[in-house]
Image (cartoon, rainbow, N blue to C red; front, side, top):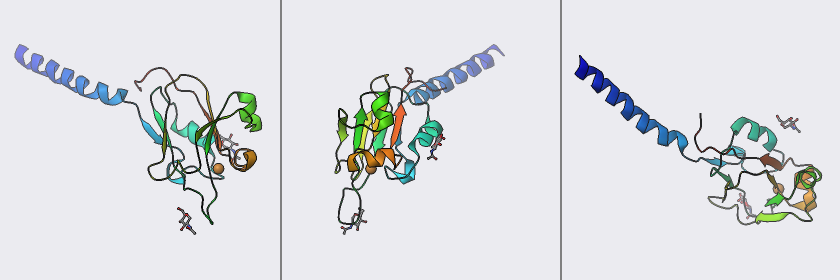
Amino acid sequence: MEARMATAAVLVLLALVHVVPEACRAERFVVGDAARWTWGYNYTDWVIRKGPFFQDDSLVFTYDPPNATTHAHSVYMMRNLADYQSCNLKTAKLVAGVTEGAGAGFEFVLKKRKMHYFVCGERQGLHCTAGQMKFIVKPKSSVCRD
Ligand SMILES: *[C@@H]1O[C@H](CO)[C@@H](O)[C@H](O)[C@H]1NC(C)=O
Ligand SMILES: *[C@@H]1O[C@H](CO)[C@@H](O)[C@H](O)[C@H]1NC(C)=O
Ligand SMILES: [Cu+2]
């Protein structure tokens, strides 16, 4: 009887050892999923559905390089909420240029536990103001999900 209980305890322990590292692993998210990084998709809603995000998770931006028929996209990070809200790109930092979203896309690792204000910088901010190409992410500290 005691031996059986010990075996059961070992099995439970093994199950825990197996499960914990899986649950703690950082995740990779393709921004917009099948829609990718494009005009007119609601990324604010996407963040609500996908979140919360954790430190060391990564966001992958995928978009085709511009040609005669497709519009260019890019990724910029705004300095603060005011610039984000007004889509003011004057002091924004370029994260990924128009050709960097090709193929497997551009991967941004959420290393810092700060507000990240992502926007598309194309057409002098029009993709941000009218195309909904903007979202805010603030990663949580724990790598372990519940
Ligand atoms: C986008 O989604 C957010 C969150 O669900 C919502 O508050 C907002 O109204 C949506 N924007 C548009 C233009 O539908
Ligand atoms: C432009 O790029 C799109 C998406 O990659 C592609 O489907 C299309 O064939 C390209 N058009 C031209 C004219 O190269
Ligand atoms: Cu764009």
